[in-house]
Image (cartoon, rainbow over all chains, first blue to last red; front, side, top):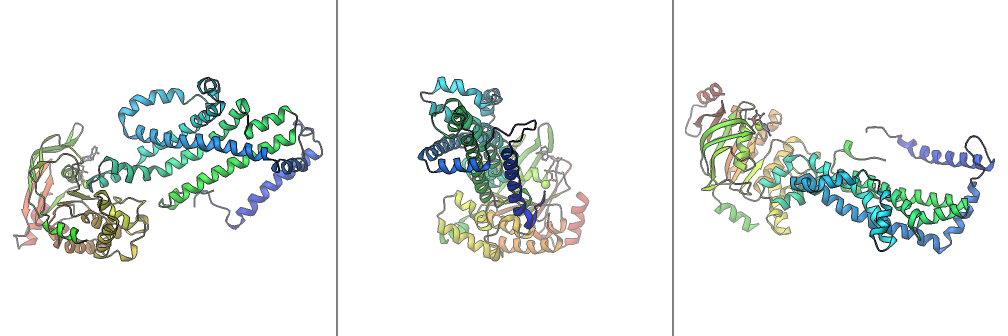
Length: 264
Length: 244
Ligand SMILES: Nc1ncnc2c1ncn2[C@@H]1O[C@H](COP(=O)(O)OP(=O)(O)O)[C@@H](O)[C@H]1O
Ligand SMILES: [Mg+2]
């Protein structure tokens, strides 16, 4: 396998790597290390753990978490549907390319987070604005990967289905959609990552709930252990959702030859 | 199942008529103003050197390529786009890699909205017929080249098309597997009335399978030879080789 896997030492090494990083954190913060970076103002592991235990017992923590999850799943879900549809249309129809491509190419370089002012003006509630920003962020990687996947699809498959009596819709359903899945999932992986960046940033700027809002609030209240708990929560959520995307992607593309499947 | 078998019996082969047909890509013409008749129900083998336009001709018959000029008739209608009446078999990799053997073979029936059970029964019958019993649920990448071509053959014929267009279907196989597949093909073709246009660059394969052989070269059809009516294979073989 390309890149090589550590074999049976893979998991021990991964766990050890996390433990070493945590240990280093503990040493630096417990000794109030002031090298050039200043660790004296950051909380130690036991302070963080105590704060995490306290928060896990409160409904606010769970509600924030659910709020952020709902936002990201809504934005990301809409972006998946719209991104795949746009990517397929752009890949297969010259007319769609003429109409949409110039618009998309102008909007694409704008970081989604820069749309916050427009989102606030555009939508009646902050909630919709945050979902919109998440949607925009995830939309582009998904649409771009889908378009490339459509164009990379061998025409032979389409020829085969057409000479077996298939019409356009059969080609779309039996060739294009299954054939682009590996590429689409590449886009979804990137998309879920940027979606998290944007949902958290948007919450920090204009939220009233959510993990991002709570983390920023903790900072303004000088509650540093809570800041770290918030960060860790964001990290874990991001990791879990990415892993879910990867897992679904791998199950759905079992037909790929081994070398082309993703491994983690 | 019974309805499919009856349909197959009632089905007659599709003839083709090419009138002053020129084919090409952009400015480059591959064949110029050819005239050719494919008789309903016959096996016409097209031979020619690599690059002589065999695939191009076949794609035009399938409706995948529009002639630059001239007319192609299938039966007595102009060929305009593809049709399930004219199924195509490709050299390799024509199977959908995400569908199992059985689901690849069922595809033409699925497209025709044949019900699940009838579809499964028809596919199963073909799987037995081409000798793929063990491989029913395998993916194309798990099959040998010969097995993949068995699947393509079954998939092309399962919905009883009136013509089968085969583009060097055994060209990528080793000699032994190729001989095996030629026997499978002859066996399968005995029970169908479909017209077959079979492309190869192997003269012996042509003589084995053909009712007639058309030799392609120099931007046109060099000659068409009757194989069934001729006992002297050796001289026929020499004549084809000389034209190539
Ligand atoms: N899609 C294409 N675009 C441009 N030229 C092509 C294309 N396909 C084939 N050709 C050219 O047409 C000629 C005939 O090709 P082809 O029909 O594939 O020959 P054969 O099947 O007899 O080997 C070749 O010169 C080839 O380069
Ligand atoms: Mg060819």
